[in-house]
Image 1 (spheres, rainbow, N blue to C red):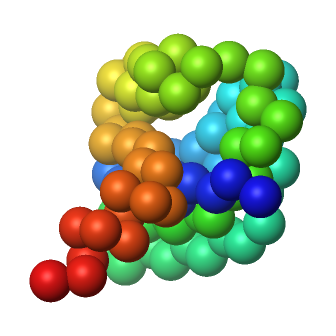
Image 2 (cartoon, one colour):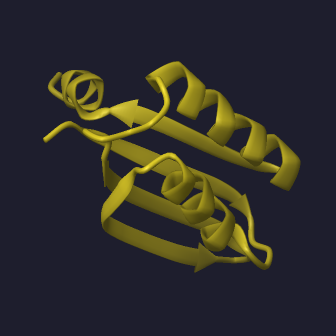
Length: 90
C-alpha cells in the first residue's frame, strides 16, 4: 500500500473537509485516517490516505490540492509517506 499525508491549515469556514474529500474521491484516493481541530478560529486537519489506486500523477494531485487551498485561503499539502518519514527521522 502506498500512503501519503495531507495537511490542511487556515481560517475555518464551511465546507473545508467536504471540498478536500471531494478532490480525493474524484482522484480515487482512499482516506485511511483523519484528524481535525479548530483552535481560535483556525482549522487544522491531517489525513493519512492510500494513493495506491490514485487516478492522477503525484504532481497533478498536489497541484489540485494546492489550487483548492488557494481558492479557499488555506494551505493544503500532500507528502508521500516515504518523504514524510525521511524528513522526520532526524
